[in-house]
Image 1 (tube, rainbow, N blue to C red):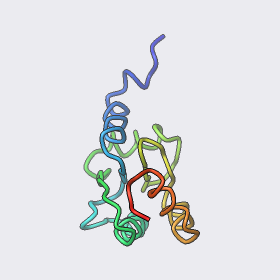
Image 2: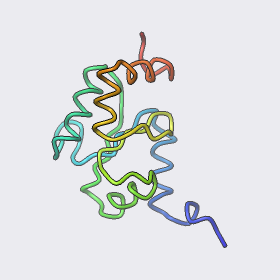
Image 3: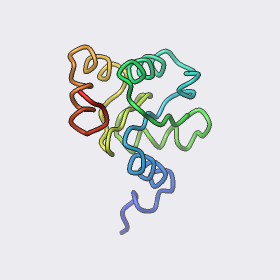
Image 4: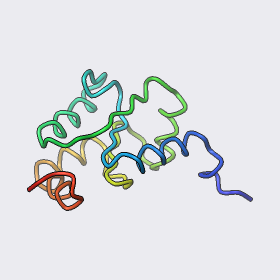
Length: 114
């Protein structure tokens, strides 16, 4: 039996995106024009911190929209990945931002200066 992660083209796309880009936000809409409030909040937080990130619009492709949920085993969008690791959705990102954890994580990963 083969590993589904290696045979699922959507999971391959997602794995490639989170490997090639240090910070990836799977979101509804694009960073310049979020199409849901939760995605907008995470974009605002990342912009406020000055983090460079790539936005992937899940509304453009139903396979990606559903695939990201199974890839991370997380039911909601947006989803933030840092250095290939799933960090969380909007509520977790907001809490991490408010506590200072998100900035610390990005600084520790060499993606922001302290």
